[in-house]
Length: 196
Length: 207
Image (cartoon, one colour):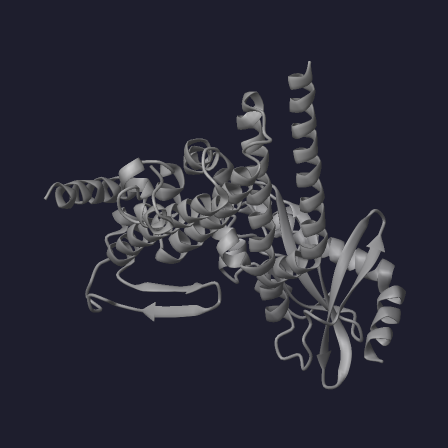
């Protein structure tokens, strides 16, 4: 009986101490880990879209709630004006969600450029959406609209052999437009808050 | 007969160097040794866990009831592995992305449980610290060596960045005309490389 009690106590105390330690470390590293994810997964796309910005879009960012989702917005400053935002949306691809970083100019309400962030598409087919500029370059400097591939009666040339991926990118870009229009007043408010 | 602390430390570097002499911890040895950088990262992560768990287990060796010792060891090891995983995500995210699944898998690395059971649970704190450090550093050196061989032969160059402290980049070791022997960077190459090294270790050891 004594031995049994002993075992229970030792295991309980060990597990509790372990849980406490891990919770403490997790709390202390959470911010840093989020920053690292930002830096290695999202930042390359943000940097490319907002290339030439005079600020650091990775630090000039804010979060807004859209429905149940929280979206991070990265702000780019051009010619002394913080007039461009960049955020990530998702479309259903062939192998899962395709993440698309979309840069939108606030003054002209148009997409300046887009870049694929995360995907699990087939190498050599859908993966070309990220590896080659053929698809994303069609989204350079175009007004917001519901985008569709040409096979669906739209305006975007799909990648050969990767229609589903191309559709995902179109859906993500269209989504970005609707989210942007829905949140525009809040985005402008946040940006004027950043400028101070 | 108690050995000196130095002896406990040094044995891990040659006489009991994990992948070659104990032939333990082969899963990460084969999996992550495609580049010297990853080998060192994996080795250091394992060393950290090994030292911490050895110390703690040696401290608690008289408190932990023998019937639940394995469960207790696993809790202790798993805790430190998660600590390493979080710290790597926070500070060396690039290496974390490359090592990926192999970091959580340190929990089931036989070296750790082996040292806990065979050494730390029977010895004091200081010898266990020396043992953990020796075995850990031996493991790191072995992984670095296999990684370096595979990287050099497989890609023809050697480059990396260890903990943001040491950066090295040696392109085209064999000149520009060298055609990389990519077999070495793939899984079968790891087996061949490890086998040949084991063979050499035994040859040298015989003399």
